[in-house]
Amino acid sequence: MTAGHSRDMRVGIVGAGRMGADHIRRIGHDILRARVGAVVDVDRERAEAAAADVGGAPVFGSVAEMLEAQAVDAVILATPGFLHEEDLGRLLAAGVPTLCEKPLTPDAESALRVVQAEVAVGRQLIQVGFMRRFDTGYQQLRQLITSGEHGRLLMLHHQHRNPVPPPGFTDEMIIQDSVVHEFDAIRYFTGEEIVDVDVRMGLPSSRAVEGLHDPQLVTVQTSSGILATVEIFVSAQLGYQVHTQASFEAASVRIGESSTLQLTAGGRAGSAVDESFVPRFREAYDREVQRWVDAARRGEIDGPSAWDGYAAAACCEAGVESQRTGVRVTVELAETPDLYT
Ligand code: ISE
Image (cartoon, rainbow, N blue to C red; front, side, top):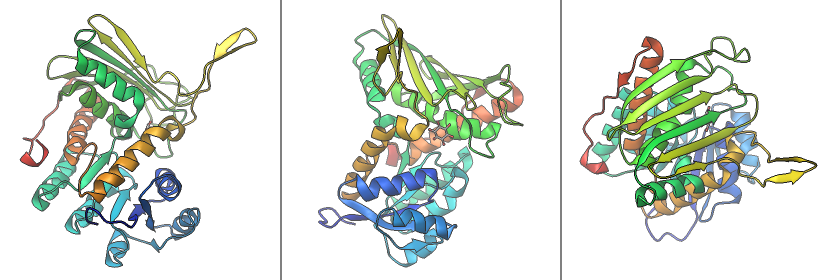
């Protein structure tokens, strides 16, 4: 689609699972200047049900079929990360702007291949779905860090809790699917690269599913020396919580405590706890997707790039190695191509 096009941008949503179905609903009902152009899923029934939710759209079994039919102007790729590389290759070759759900790919080598393929195309077509960058609290904290109002940022402390993990979740996925968000958030907050990652596994919860070591504590250091910790606990039972506390030279700041009202009644005070990332980050997703649609119509991206996806994947790789070896692991990054500077 070229700049100035007046009709709605036709968005193909690839993967009609939890996140894909949410994006189909979002594009179909909430986002301006876009409509659902196609739904792709290997499970045809699931794709048809999701398409029916927005009044119907053509359904395909693969990205190749969708491209062949010239059914879309842009794509949201919402399949699991290990399936991304091949489809991103096809979409890049066809010049299709793509919002790729995180992670870009699970490991650094494949993520770098995606970056190289985009560099070969010569323009940024891929935006990575690190939606937390569009959350108001995240944006306010970043602004506070940049302003220097309370002195330098010294430490970040993150708590990332899910009630239960999705079926088939592994220790590696705890890093690649969950902590990947914090790796990106730390790069976003500090504007610096992460230089090393250390993962410790303490006392496991008796509620953790078989084979999963949960919770884990991740510590990273950035290039200037800022330390950040992440408590990742995917079987936390209590609901969905993503908190950040930032320690400055002359202040401490907390974000993400609650997205709902605080009620005091009957001698108690409190607020509801979100049940998943969908309600917790709903506004961030809406903002992310609207801005991506408007940018894609101009032939641009407006958010984290394939390079950001690669840098986060490199941190994940270090994290998985640290899980395995029990030692702190240095993050190895390739040189940044000019396309991303
Ligand atoms: C999931 O894929 C997400 O992206 C959520 O934001 C995260 O909290 C969860 O741990 C992941 O499994």
